[in-house]
Image (cartoon, rainbow, N blue to C red; front, side):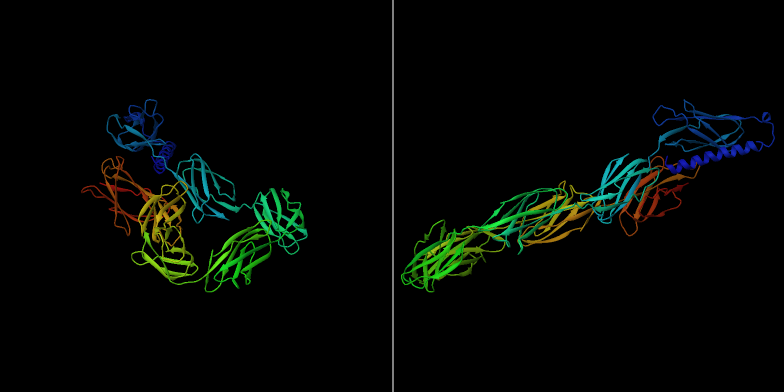
Length: 627
């Protein structure tokens, strides 16, 4: 029995008692002699919800010709005595139960009546909801935990709203949590008592972690431009200003090491341990001392077709240029230790090698001779590209000469009129890699054929993260230049791999949820791409009611009546059938206007149909009658 019917029956029972009291107070039957009028008895039994059992303590009311009440004994029996002839209605009442039939009409006519019996059934428990809003520094994606009579979790939507449904009466606790934020209040106790509970609200505040500063200075032989490295509780670096000052901000409590570094200088101390515990630290001071610097010479010779006035360029640990003298000799002085590259150049001449590397390490150093030769432009370098792509690959030639060309439809290419020298050949095409990535060729008095470059298509990934009401097992469909499906993991993540450049549409789907955006078009252009979504649970409602008859024994439920439901503006039809008590329920409905129409063969119904509006809550007691 639902709460509405229970209240009606209790109200009827209380009315019966009050009317009985008034009748007694007014003298009862108008002064007639009871002994002169014969009376009779109505008796019966109420069986329990379990087959073969009886139900004790059921209130049974008697209405119409007389008003009275009785209570079933341990065997489920009840009775009414001293009744005059007339029409009566017997009705059982007990919280938590419904009865079949709901009531029985009895006619007393010169004899006792036995047999208005009833069968009890356990009533369906009504459920309710708890809802509220999180405002303040953060609204969306706050985890809200429900404890107490039931345990559940949910996340707030973009407006900070959350909702727990299908809750029975009882005591609950609601608590919001999100890393980096605090909430007021921390939690709230909620009592559900036959109604929904709303406005269980919270205010969020960003939890600010205090930070501190380390400041210091460098003095002595150098002040500006000293690199200060911070390690330990955090890893950072900075450079001293013109006065040697430095600082590190935004530091948490912890242990750190501060170390100064600058080439050519040493520092006292070489580093300093600093402990931050609830306050700023001022005082890492260092004194710089210049280191003695030893320098060295780098010499070499150019021989061959031309020796004088050859430009030699030095790069690496130091940068400089010089030219050879009449004997082809050159030199660089004042060099510190390090790796250097020397490169000779003169228009109209090639050099072998084209450049040379040498390491200066604590001594003067000599570079191997460069041999010059007159450039002759009559040789060819050729080859082919094979594999995933052949045509349209760009070949870049660098070294003694710089040129480029493009492969034809057979993948072949050629460079003509090349002089003797060293060359590097590199294939390039967007979306492809090549093996080898480049080739080094030496032209020395003849044509050269380069081994084939093998091309391979470069592929990329499209991945993303789903946040919101649901994370795991959401179907992600990929369409466009490639088609595939996958599902999100427990963290809401998904990935599609092996994708070429192109346009792709990703679409998340899961029954009972909507997604923002509904789908996303992504262009992959020589790099991995991402597409993220936010899920929101669809809240649905139900419409319920009952079909009863109006004939003899009226008010009884009518079984197997088809209830047809159509939403305004929609074409799909939903149907349900009433149960043996005449009840029906249609769930999983969203907000909107609906029309319900009962049908059962040639039977007629009043009303013939009903318009119902669902607007944020369930709709009950949508009832029909039939003769």
